[in-house]
Length: 357
Image 1: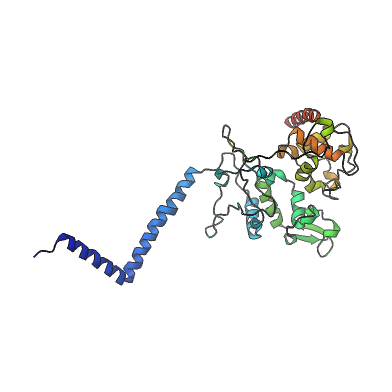
Image 2 (image 1 turned 180 degrees about the vertical axis):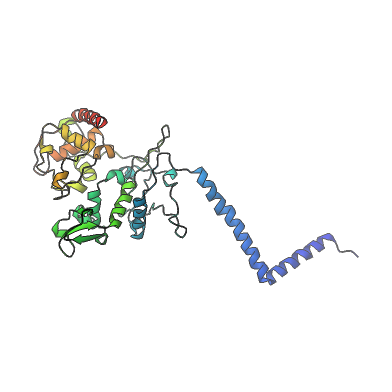
């Protein structure tokens, strides 16, 4: 009597699984095959497709050789534990970049090597400031080197550790050595000139490369959400222009890291604003031009070049007026204040000067 087809299939099915579980080679081979197929479908193919779906922004600039090595220094010293590289789409993050970060900002980041995975360095905690746009916010090489040697030199309240091991002290630096100006009170060990090692210069090159890429023309710019109203003024510019911005807060955010809270700067590195002829001058044209276009006129005195803070940080005429009036009326300074309208005219003049250079 023939066996029904259904029973035959059931018997063969049961026999196959009994043999599969009894034969460890077949069992592990089958499991490995399932794992490989699932990995291809779930991980490899989507990742491969993402390379085409998410391209870098057209204006993005690849890291230079020094900046790439500096990124490795950044990683090896665990800087990502305290610094993020992501501008969130909320109003409080507007100080870190011109726009919220998008996926394309990270599309050109590749594996460090065949053995080391990709490091986006977006971070998860901000014990220190975000670094997404630090190359524009703080492009001063001198400031960054001093800050690495001992952060307390330029930011007294800083809890960042010192990276003095990236420097060495020499009595007679070589011609090509990069010497940084460190006050004697902050020197570690023997006296002499503090010289930056290649690792320090590479790390600074990496920080200088961190700049938000401009979006292509016509591309919509993501909005910052939950916008906050401007802080109330401290009257530094209110009497002159009706400006209600807090000049002191703006000074802290844009100028204090170099010129210090007391306006006295850092001897040999950053000039003082206290008693400065430029600040006290009733003609504010030079002061506005320096803010908008930067300044290199005091390099022979040992001071590094000042970056164009107003241009880099997209400061408005109201913000610049508030900062200037804070500087003109603080630390014993008693200069004529400026109006917003006056600053607007001088900003236009500064733009013409920049375009003719």
